[in-house]
Amino acid sequence: MIIGICFLFVCVSLTPTMGATKKGPMRTSEGDIPTWTVGDAWIYTVNPLSFSSPNGSFDGSIQNFKQTVGGMTDDSYTISITGDISGNVDVSGFSGELTGVITGQSYIRVSDLAEETTELHSTGTIRYLWIPFDYSMDLYMSSTPALEVYDFPIQLEEWQLNGLT
Image (cartoon, rainbow, N blue to C red):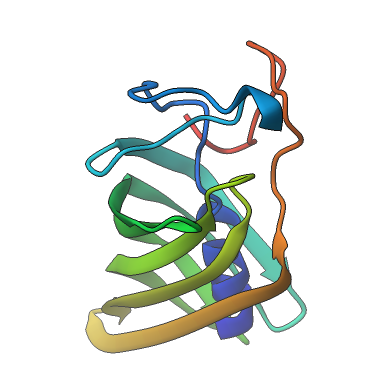
């Protein structure tokens, strides 16, 4: 089940690209890839957020899912991630209400906005009947080559990520 929740974090950690206000020059030689600056931020509600496997399921949402450009080098952006996760979790007949927070960082390649690495941490409570159980989860994802999420150029109204509003 923890692997399932980790998979959910992978899906929601994909950095939004088209919500950025262009504050710098566009790299026209690279197909209109947005240029981000430190301080650019995006806030989403991820609802529904669902996962199901033979070992368990999760149905919930992430509120205030915020991604902020916190730093930049010649090769990559550093994106800080925060959010509030809640929902119902079921693991082998153990059902409870999960509430918690997500924090972390992603490193995104400047040239094509491909995701290089993401580190996520989530803590909170799973309430079973009236008894609260604390949980803590760390997730580290790295892709070689980097995970290319977008195929540039992207035109207006031509792309979507299901589950994001």
